[in-house]
Image 1 (cartoon, one colour):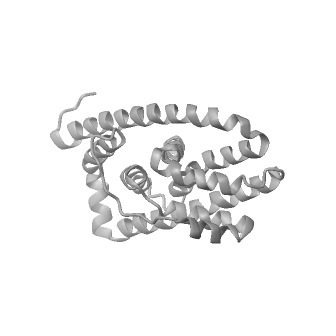
Image 2 (cartoon, helix red, strand yellow; image 1 turned 30 degrees about the vertical axis):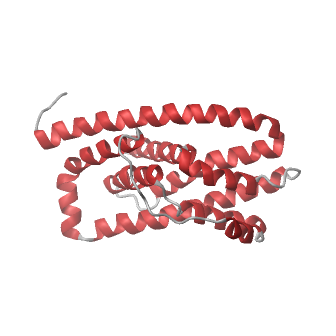
Image 3 (cartoon, helix red, strand yellow; image 1 turned 90 degrees about the vertical axis):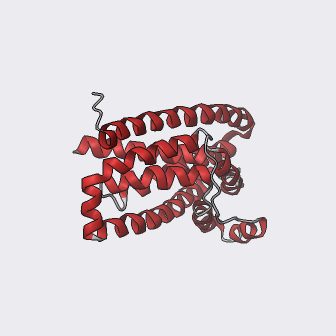
Length: 232
């Protein structure tokens, strides 16, 4: 049981990291990196702002995750139905998520946009502004981040009845690259361009590999629990 929980938490962390370095969320994260790393001469303050940003971002995911997971599990009939049939739904969900990650399906997700004026207003709050920025950017869902959160994390959280742990780990994962880059800015900005270029290549392959894995696992679940073909 503990091993399954650790594996699930590791999956949630990876989903968060993949969300953070995907093209659409990365655009907002560059703004966050600039905000957190602007005090180049004070690495301690950069780290503190990064931690507050992580907490702010995680709180939003915990709030949304707890609301969705709690609503599902709070209805006895629905909860029992999902316990009995969860694997039947998981296959199609993973398959669709994989297709979105491979950009074979295009989604249009209405999300919260954070304009320059809002960012400047947040900047006036110093360290605590990092938390506000984390909350705002966490609400800025785009197709990839929405697919990973609602299509992968939420089913994972429902499966393990995890209101808090999975969304929290996911939130930490989304903030880790931001904090890492902010620290790089504070310590040595000259390395940043090269790392960004390598990250873009890594993200592209990581997203494709993850998408293929989701599709294969989704097809396995569909074959096993919907069609009744037992492959293994």
